Amino acid sequence: MGSDVRLGPRFERVLELAREADLRGIDMLSFPDHLAIGRKAFDEPLHFGEPFPFPRQMAWYEPITALAAIAAVTRRARLSVNILIAPLRSALLLAKQLATLDVISGGRVSVGMAGGWHDAEFAASGIPLKGRFGLLEEQISACRALWSGGAATFHGERISFDELYAMPLPVQGARLPIYLGLPATGRHVDRIARLADGWSWGYVDDPPQIAAGVGAIREAMAVHGRVVEHFEVKAFPRPIRGVDGKIDLEATFGRVPALLAAGVTIIEPNLYDYCDTEDDIPRLIEQLLALKAAYGAAAT
Image (cartoon, rainbow, N blue to C red; front, side, top):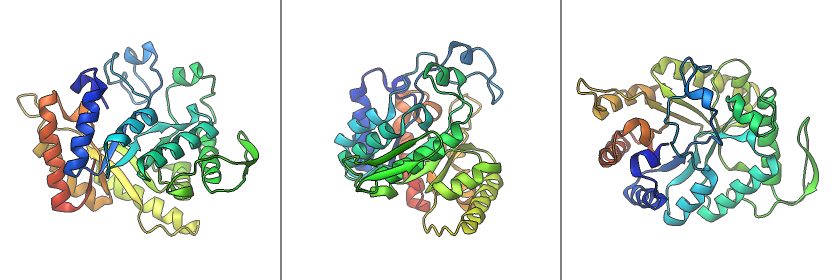
């Protein structure tokens, strides 16, 4: 997130950084997703109580396209979107894009999905905001069907098809990992438990909240008879700034052990929030690699 703000407008620099991070042992490379942001979102409080907290001119690269370029210059890091607003895409296109990316990368895709929130973005796409979570569920199930091989058939309320072949298949097949970026509350717990291979919940200042969420998800999985040996949990601590106003990475990552104890398996900071300038990026990478060496948590 914010790679153009910290690295400049040349995507070539993003590729150079991705190559370096991959070689040095960073385990996952991620992009965020928004198709567009309405002007009012920058000026008025949104559902989370504040205006959209990123610059108006920040580049939101289409993530699957950007990751295809990243795949060509990396060899080992997994490729992820945190979080793909799946309902803004058709299920067939989504399945095709992710399968193609998985083939290009040699089976390294782990995608986060969510229902989205920005009404202007949905309206401009001609897609109703209401009912987006039900649509998200159908999209995941339709993708799994299309990735299974053979003639795929799926019938839901909004997605329906018979005997479709969608080639190529992902290298990882129908079990290409999908994380859900939803709060572990109410019906979302059941969605995560039934459909997801991981839970992605962004900034976290309350490890007990994460532990409670993981516990609720595990309980719901047991109800559905799901036995998942490796269930990933993504999170990252909110950055701490020192008295000089600069980001204190040591203090920020000092919160990581509590997150790991709560069940987090992947620490996923972003360039915009964790680096004030390009000069801060090497220190962020060093801190992530130190965490990986100390705790074995995936560094992303």
